Image (cartoon, rainbow, N blue to C red; front, side):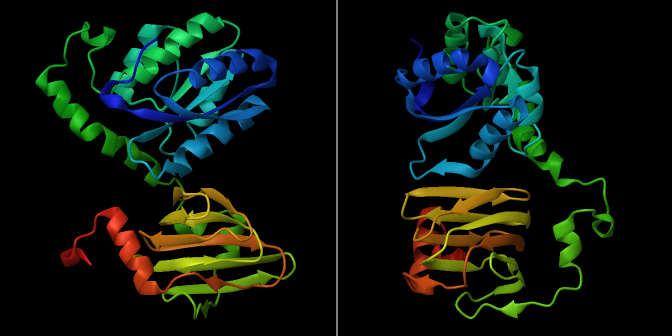
Length: 314
């Protein structure tokens, strides 16, 4: 069995088209036995595009409290093509259909592939296991078949130095001007008047519907929501911006950007940091309530300690 370099450990989300459930089950079982895999979350089966979307959303939004734990995804459909197409609709996901060990090594070395797509029709489970092992064991920039199994030359390393940042910036552009948006929520936002959130400095909210309740919320960059909980669970969708959420009850954290969705169950204590000016749409059942579990200074100190912010940067 291949082992991951640098003693990395992985948390892997997996899902598949219902027609290849047995192939998905086989790769999940293999990964759960892998020495470098700390956890496999089996998201089950669905239509191929829904299965791919479920894995992609989790890969983008999930991270572990342990910095040594790397989040990846595995998706399976008949050809491997459909799940690749739809997983790659999510910024931050680099999904590649791999039909051989060489494909897996190349995709990691050159493209930093974080979602492995497999074909249930063309790739037997035994081959899929070998592909997955190689995919886990290969770091970005590693020697690979495309480099003649030799280290990449210096000019290629210079390209690799800038490629990840340039890749990540591509989805930030938009074919639509801001005023041309056809999104119903964005249209609702136009001309909206907000009310200050007394419990959360820097936050504003406008309730647009009662029972079930929906609201549009915005926070300025740098704002913090101290640890708190509600008597209701709530769904939110980020319209624009960037925020980091710590679910202290579950010891999980999520990096959310444009289009990301997150559900927080009733009673879960969570803390938030807004890394950019952020607007989001939120929905819950019942009347609004909020119970603070810490003060603002305690929250800021905890976040600064985790993010490594020096006193001079505050």
